[in-house]
Image (cartoon, rainbow, N blue to C red; front, side, top):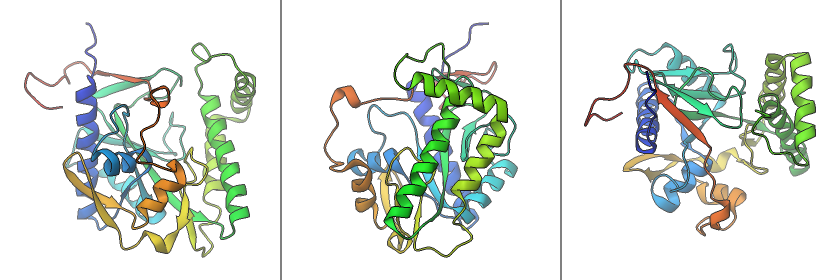
Length: 280
């Protein structure tokens, strides 16, 4: 039987449905999440998805994050909604993906990017950061190394272009197979949470690809609301400084050659395809 591809419109609607489901679960359980990175940028600049983007990212303080992951895995209100996190077999990220279990997504550049889950929303923890700028940069640099190692150990070298990063990625991939992929992810999580037992004034997202996704915790509050595809969601009180730290003049559109999507396609599982005129 020929597989039916999830269209771009269906994919975006699925992500919006996941976001709405998370919003309800959080409100029902007294948890707060915040739009993050390109999703927040899209909300501020476009009131929704960045036109060429194809994902949704949210952040929660670690305590709320841990509670939400547990809720997502145990909830029955949305039977189509599942979650994968660090401790799950075959999942190699130090954060959570809330996903639609009616389809299977396939990444081009990562061999196991979507080994068992469908269209997703990325759910990131907010962890404590050291209080001096020098230590924050050192901490983030090490976090970036772990993220690069995780990406390398999952790279599809059949589609990887040969360049200056090819051999280092190949080396890290081989090293991960020797020490064990799960061990690498545990090392990453343990390092990223190393300051959580300390009282610090600074917090951030250690799983990020951005060099300065950290801020003073006090500046998060009280949270405000921004519009994303017709609905209101929380953003940090310091949303402007947060976006400027990552994108500089964030209201300026980037040149076309820098407008990248994530190269993920998805297919409906047999019998799970939406009927005609039925929303995903």
